Length: 165
Image (tube, rainbow, N blue to C red; front, top):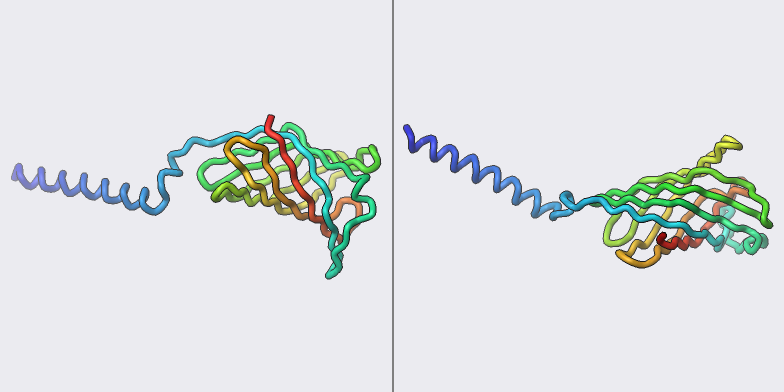
């Protein structure tokens, strides 16, 4: 009778360690990794606009200034959260400002983020996607694609440059 309890206990312990080994083998140790919080500020540079099948460099690209402030990118395992203040200027005049938030997937140093820009003063929203290369120490660079703020029905491709604070 006493040996059967020892056998059952040994089988239970073996089962638990087998389950843990399977989880670690499948997902690695990333689910135990603490979250990273990266603080940044930066600028966006318009590269091209697209309208249906036409791609062109906008004439007003030099006068457009897009800036993000007080940004944070939180990474935990394979998930990431993005948050920043967004300011859009044309010829020095602020056309739009608000909160830029998003969430996405982080894999092999690249963050894939779906974001929303909410202009609370004008009650407008813009949606887009961002691809961001995140290194452990340096600045972050990437691209984003969204609907143009200045011209409805056109899509913009924008270069992203974010400096760590």
